[in-house]
Length: 368
Ligand SMILES: Nc1ncnc2c1ncn2[C@@H]1O[C@H](COP(=O)(O)OP(=O)(O)O)[C@@H](O)[C@H]1O
Ligand SMILES: [Mg+2]
Image (tube, rainbow, N blue to C red; front, side, top):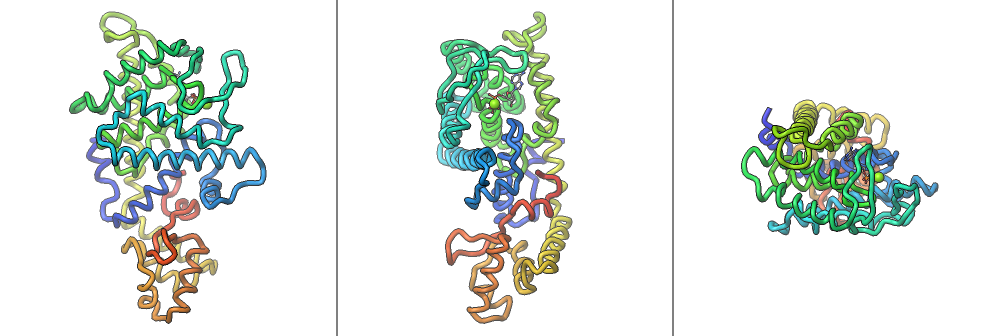
């Protein structure tokens, strides 16, 4: 399986606007998995609620919801920068610190802390490299700020996608995930930043730039394997045949193999759930169930059935499709908005598919 080609082939036959709606869902899915790995128990439903400003009463749950809102906003800001700044270097210290800064400054105060080696709780300054030692598993990261800065400079020099051509780009992509985590430049948030970096790097090398799958799902679902492979690649070089740097090249290649296997699994999984014929059938079933439960009317169902192949629906079209007058059309639109199955950017804007947690569970079983 060719990762680049099979990633690019995803979503064939699906309307481009619906693919955009799926990308919106994937931002939530990314956040769900990457934060779940760091102990955030929110469900996709909790994330939807948070995005609708419905925050839990209990403070801890609320903070977890806000962590997702922060993460989704950072992804959006990151995608915008990647679009607008072709010269942006994803492996640069500036970019990595920017990701950390963007995420942590959006977090509620009670989540901006780290535990030191001695167990002391210290505040995390958004975007700031650490200046004390850290351990993760049995790995001890470089200690001083100077050392961290030197490793980050080497990291950018050796692993930037801009410096690599052809197949080494994929190895650079996978290696950068580990090497960044080996440096572990921040006192907290390294896992989240590493996974954001991986998304950005993938976009730069044209793998997963459609944002229709996420390797983070594999990391989270195979957490023990992920940690084990990271730990294996922390090991020093064994002999003269094991690369030239301080760390084992053989173990790094093993990590890259694991990483790329995770990518393949995820592309395959998404390819399965995005097969148009099956997707349409699941969609029909979902809309049918909403009608049966009377969550939407028959007229609403009719509109929903048109929305999938059409991608978007100008509000004026509702009159024509349902053969009703303006007043009734407005009612039907309101009913769909209230059921949260459609959304609209502006009060008079076209209707778009809103892939909530419930819809996602029906359309893309076991995605999150
Ligand atoms: N042995 C290891 N070597 C390097 N990185 C590791 C190792 N084990 C786990 N990790 C990474 O460290 C991350 C945790 O670091 P941390 O700074 O707490 O990040 P976050 O706050 O995002 O959880 C994990 O998500 C994983 O990506
Ligand atoms: Mg952590």
